[in-house]
Length: 257
Image (tube, rainbow, N blue to C red; front, side, top):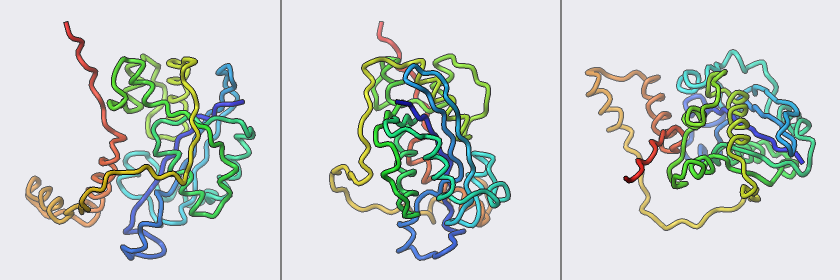
């Protein structure tokens, strides 16, 4: 049995959608994976190798400016890389263990991995189904509610782990996640089974729509000028990514005297 601690970087920019700009069809396109990074640990947490591969985009023709700024990955860098089906096969060969357990920082990476596999019509049964979401266990480690989640960098800093690489690089983030896992692991941490078809029941809420016109208008008021098309695209993407809460930094609760 091995632990596969993996991380993804992905891109989404509908203004550079290769196939269709139809709002009706956009929903079927996932966040496109542009880098997979992973670290393999054995049952005793010994490092058994690492995996790092960039992915050639086939859905969106360009890396969005926001993603490029965040990750340092640009279109020229990935355009000559292997496509997702090729990288996926290499990743499966790297895992090479039917009993492997995925370890992730938050649920978005495993969700987007399966979505990309489905989009490319690949065999999702090749992927491990057991997983451990390490992120909430860090909150438990510090005696906080699992509703109050640390982002990766904050967790590294709070656990006093050495910062030797930049963040928002899939391989480096996988490395940090592995080190966090080693630091906080207890026998009470058990893997769960991921079901890519499971849709959690949600309370029906009124359908809401973001008023991007007013959002952009507010920025234009703040900066006393009209936003360019590129700036508008960045604002929209940043707003949507912010709603996922993956970049939220949670302050520690003060202990009552």
